Image (tube, helix red, strand yellow):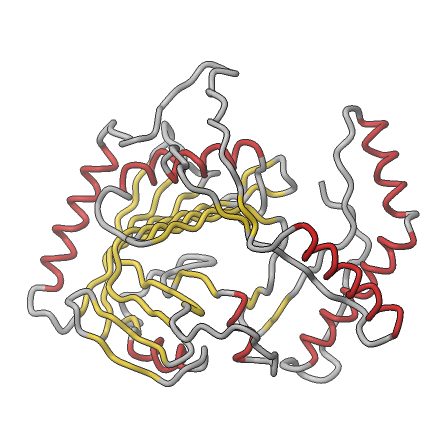
Length: 355
């Protein structure tokens, strides 16, 4: 497959990224929205969204499956290394590629925690060969929103091997353009009075382990630390709930209002939806430069500037927070050292307070 694309640009100074996404997501599934609030107070310049897929990629313990829009499939060996071969299959015609900053097109998706076993020898006490380790889509429709210039770049991808590929792309562009011009936001309520958002109905959360089991794990972890067997461990539990009445996009909308974060995401697949807001970049690769930015040490925000600064001083003077921060810097440096050139690793910032 060789992908070709066409791009149209629009001025949309009466819309937000969310209202644009609410329109185009009705076109087809899967869909996604990626947004960023920098410093918790300012929206980043670009938002990215997409709908439909020229191909999807799913990785499990027994192998990786590439599924094309027409239903054809191709199978690859287990592990994320197969993504290199898949990206070669989903190559874009260099004459057609849209040279947008950050994300001109490619694969969008998620990697599950259990995929760590592809990189590290970690025991698995309860293996599930059917569990998804990663899932990606190559969007058919990609929309890039410039929140500063209030412009939208709309790109549609297609398979050049189809005789009518360009005609299909033009038809799809016309279809999406019609959605952009419409006023229908689907299930999203356009406007609410301040404070008029109804409180969500209470839901009952169920953990995958009891309180006693979790507390026992904490005590055991502390014993391992005292014995010198480990110096860091992350314990977790999974909560589940049934009967959630709110539509997924409305939940995301509430989350971005209550917790604006540098990395907000909404992935909607036919059988699952992922919603999240994170302050931390896991890893970023820009050209030949790899970057990690670990976060350690947190405090709540103060009601006033003076209270805020006092909480910051308290955090900076806390030996536990400082020790954890230094430990994560060392871990991040070691991780980069496994893949980067010797002597190229730099720590330009440390102990920086982010709000």
